[in-house]
Length: 157
Image 1 (spheres, helix red, strand yellow):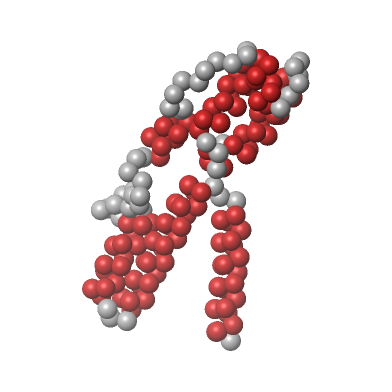
Image 2 (tube, helix red, strand yellow):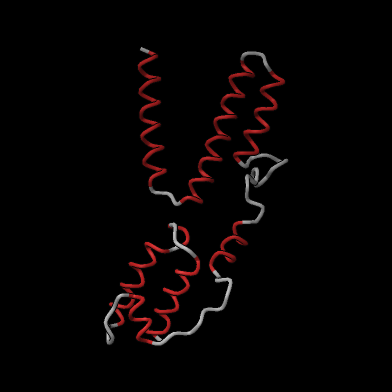
């Protein structure tokens, strides 16, 4: 009976992880994976401690706590491959590197895929549709997102 329960817990936990990760953007997925690895290291350290291997358990616990972000040595967790704070990343990624050249209303309509004279509701809907596909968090680029935002701003005044 215990092997069946363990298998059931693994299957249900795996399905939960798949569902949770499917709805995440890549940045959140990276943070989630880091916390999951930290929790796994802490659990493994607990098992090692119970088996009497305290030196390895202590080291593994410290690493797990650092990954998870619950350590006095690493209060914000380990910064794996990212030397900037999230606030710096967000402000840097949301601004284009070069100033955008202004364009006319006709060019803005073309960019949003609308005909001249489209209503405000149509403009906002086209902007939202395009940003879903071209937002930097969804695999688009800062430049395209800035141009789409600029087109909306030009048309809405």
